[in-house]
Length: 332
Ligand SMILES: [Fe+2]
Ligand SMILES: [Fe+2]
Image 1: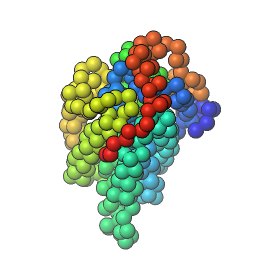
Image 2: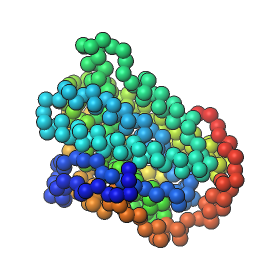
Image 3: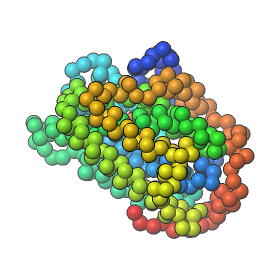
Image 4: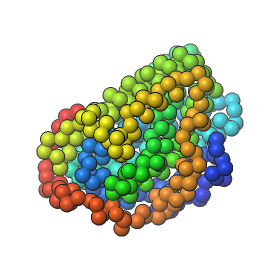
């Protein structure tokens, strides 16, 4: 990623209500002024969202790896172009979230013990098996393509949510972090149909769709709560940080996290026989955000906003503590 914004995406206007031509954008984010609790006074919500930085670098690298194997099987030129655009976007997403991790380390929160496990899961557990060419190898590829379709249902859900989460702005969330999340979220909405279309093109079996959804949803819930727990317990600014369901529900009520109800309502959506991702999310809003995103258009976001005004003294004091604090890392 360089400081130079890439050329503008192909025609993507508010009138395009179903699909746009997909291409990766060259983005740049400056983390040097982002505090550890980038939602002031709300470490629980900060770390719930921070779990994205733990899962996405390895997860989206894995998407790219699997899709490169699927490319030769695609018999539709339009879908092939979409998949190539998808690969480019996910590769940039992975690197952009990876770039946040050194900032967390500098602030006294080393995510390595957790990311090492996530890396193992995607590279070994979900990696290439030594199947002989033929049915077994194809089965394993189709399983992973279906898993990615299920996961993409949730990345699009989260992307659409964060684009409309004005409560984060009102709470003074760090503008660079918000821009990363919204640029990524907007591209997730932009390419929300690709994984499902690829799965349908190569297989589309309903039982596989339902089975892999259950695996993906269960794994996401497990990894997410574990990631929040890891961050809260190892946060150098918290004396006795704990993750709790109550805090998650509170975040949903306050609009700084998706509500539990919205997450549960998304389940029958994906499992419905007539499901197609193009019916989900607000593409026009996503396209509009991409046109204005500072990180995707070579500009620094304006930090001289209410963000700094509402940042609590406690956070600033705690930041000073962080610099001096030893890393009291706990296991995962
Ligand atoms: Fe992504
Ligand atoms: Fe995606």
